[in-house]
Length: 256
Image (cartoon, rainbow, N blue to C red; front, side):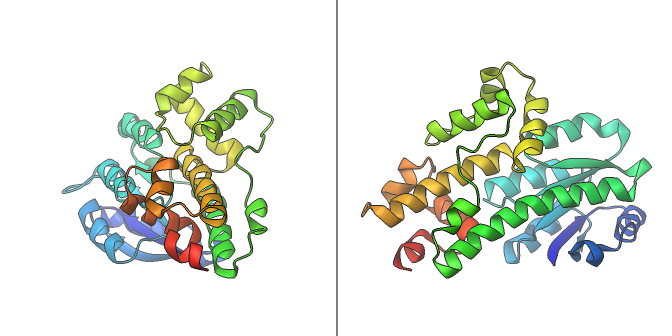
């Protein structure tokens, strides 16, 4: 079962989401309920969930800032946003920050939520393959998890994949990648997710971790040098991201 945090300040709306679908039937369980983003952040420090479903407008800490701070902390769990029609601009902002989608609270439909959960599951299963790779030490599974240069059949998306794969040591903004293929930012973000099953952020991390795995297995470079060469801003962040993808720190992975 994949764990879900539900973050919503309105009790009625929270209960509505809780009872909208049979969660366990689809492989999910709501492990935490929180009235604002600050409460959720504290819980995530102790036990990060697999998925976060959060309202956008909340007191203390809203959903946008919860998403932003989660990414800054190195947590890449999928976010599904709950929003009202009047908050649509905020929903678009959340998509640019990497949320996988949003649900309108005023017209909440089970099929919409299920579709987003299934999209989230695809990314989580990708993560689990990496953890399986590390756990059994079978580098052949790296190919099973997907190669960095895989093609989707969509020219613009394939161009972005090629560009990131060649320049993974650099940071890339959504605007830069959108200009590369002459497309609108939000459309690029959503299309990339649809074609690859990964957000742009997750794909970039995947390419960087693949490169780091190769260097850990085939070179004697220090972990700090590999971190820098693979585009990570500091060793601590590299360790967090590497462990999230593989289940081990870089040093433990190399020893195993």
